[in-house]
Image (cartoon, rainbow, N blue to C red):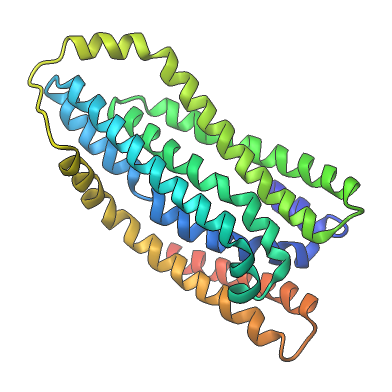
Length: 275
């Protein structure tokens, strides 16, 4: 709420800036859904099953395999968004100004993917407070950094809406990195305790890497399915609304109107969900 109000009322940003941010964010959300939605719950389930029978070694092995797997998936998503930003912005969205917002968001996919694995591992170990703190810190960082980065970009770019929008999304990337940093530091402090648990393992079950990855994906798939459908729906809007509006009004006005359409649609979706 805080940074949305700030961006909407910031001189030089307004609806056009929000339209650029929103269009780029939908592509990011789609890739994020594919790389991380459902992952914490899936890993928490598998880890808790192993720890419940004393197989701490097996639980930690699940964590390591999942971390490596989703690091690769997240990296591929980040690279796709980074190198495909120009084509997506100009040909798919038809909002050329969105290119830099996509570039700024691209690293966040990697950090969110690996953060999801770590949150799932801690949840499976009954450390729910760690996940809560990391998410809270991430939102605080995102709010503060959005304001700070946008103000800095406004000064250096002479209040360029395009670069301010990229700065707003860069703040999201920095916040996800800092959220991951907190999780990593906590994991480092728990290494001795985890090593001790592993040495006391009983009922160890050695599963194939392929089997573990398959189990994670099977558990995560139902969680991700509804989010994927929602992301596809929003991306269809991103690809069609501005393209259609540009036939009747200037591009700047079409981008601003897209923001209003997206915002109203989001409120309608929330109201429908609540009811």
